[in-house]
Length: 230
Image (cartoon, rainbow, N blue to C red; front, side, top):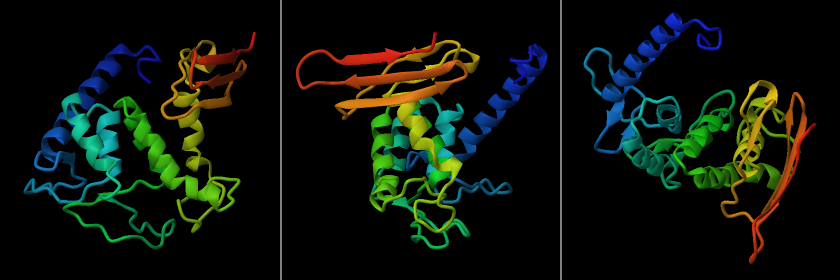
C-alpha cells in the first residue's frame, strides 16, 4: 500500500519489518524433523507444539516466510490425504475429526482454502489444488448445491461469498486470466490444461468481460478462443 501511495520511506520500513517477522517465524516454527511449520511455539521456553495445519504452512509459502528449498516438503505433507483432518470449529463446523498432533494436518475449511490453493499454485502444484477442490467442493455439487456453502458440510450458511474460491482458482489458473493493470486495463491470458481436456468461462473486468474457451484434443494443436472488450 505504501508503494502504491508513493511513500517510499514507509515502504522500506514495512518491508524490513516483514523480513524480520518472516525470519523469526522461520527460525521458531520450522520443524525440520517433519518438514513442516508448527502452529504454536511457547513464547517463554521456545518449545514447539506438535499441532500442524494447512493454514500456517500455506501462509509461509504465500507470504515469503518459507525459503523455496522447503516448499516441496511442506506441500507433500499438507496435501497428504491420509493426514488431512477436518477438525471441529464451532459454530461453523460443530463436529469434526480428532487430530493426531504428531501425524495429522488440520484441513482448511472453505474460507482459508483460498490461501492454500494460492500457495499450491505459487509452488507450481496447482494440480494438487484441483484434487483438493474436487474432494471437498465436489460433494457439495453432488448433493445438489447451486450455491457455495460456508463450510464443507451444510452446517452453517448455504450461500457464502467467501467460499467462492474455486471460481477464482479456475478462472485464474485453468482459463488463465489475470489482470496486469488496475481494473483489468491489461490482462494476461495463459491457460493451463492440467488433466482437463476443455474449459470455458468468463472473467469480468471493469472494462467488460474476457471470455476464454480452450480445447486439448487427443491429437493436434491446443486450441484457444479469446474475446476481449474493445
